[in-house]
Every structure is written in structure tokens, then in C-alpha cells.
Image (cartoon, rainbow, N blue to C red; front, side, top):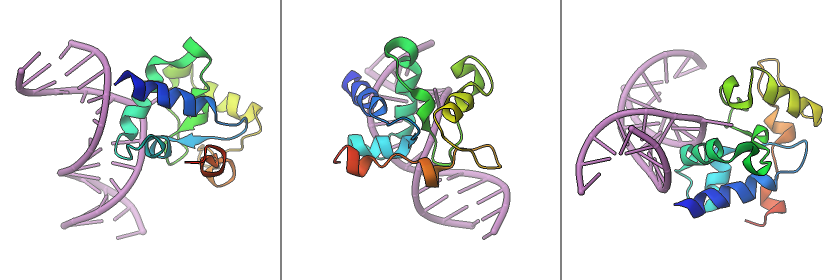
Amino acid sequence: MKEFFQEVYKIVARIPRGKVATYGQIAALLGNPGSARTVGWAMWEAPAHMGLPCHRVVNRLGAMAPAHTFGGEGIQRAMLEKEGVTFKPNGCVDLEKHLWDWEADYHA
DNA sequence: CATTTGACTTTGA
DNA sequence: TTCAAAGCCAAAT
């Protein structure tokens, strides 16, 4: 469903700078908590296409997509760090500090 | 038209 | 506690 993609794009576009969102939460926000994988799939199509901050979208562990997705290893991480996002020693985004509070912002 | 795959998540052993 | 398997929705082949 293309609309599903649009929903994903809209939500991702609303992620505040310096914050990150997880696939599962985005999916849940769309009403499809089980389609976390489909959310990621949608990102694959959208990227630079519409200036979508896909680098702010990570899995629930704070890990990011394969390097080639952003043009190289560390690209996504670099952009996030530039926005003020911190990383854990394990190399994942510090979700506890930078997880987007979509509940308050989007009014799910 | 049916099968497989995919930037994931959650539960079972 | 850690490891492994199933499940979910949508798109691509």
C-alpha cells in the first residue's frame, strides 16, 4: 500500500533534530505494530528523494542500516552526531536520551 | 497468481 | 542468562 509509505515518510519527516525513532514505534503509530519491517522497506524507496532524514530512523537497539544505504560506513552516525545525538560504547544510538517522544509530538 | 524476501520485533527454549 | 525460531505487513520476482 503506497499510502503506508506516505505515512512513514510523514512521520519520519516529523522527527525532531537530534532525536531518533524506531521502526517498531513508527509502525505502531501507523496502526501496524507488526509491520516494522515494512517501515524499513519504505525508507529504502524514499531517501534523498524527499529529503527524508532516514538517518534518524534506527531499529529498537539503536543500530542503523547497512553502510551502503547512506553512501558509506559511518555516514548515518556522523550525521546524527552532528545533530547532537550521542552514541553508546557499543556503537548504537543512545535511545534512552534521543528516542523521539512521538507520543507527545504526534499525538498518537 | 503464488512464492520469497526484507533498514524488524517479540516470544520460546 | 543467551541463543534460536516464528510472526507480522507489504513489495518484488
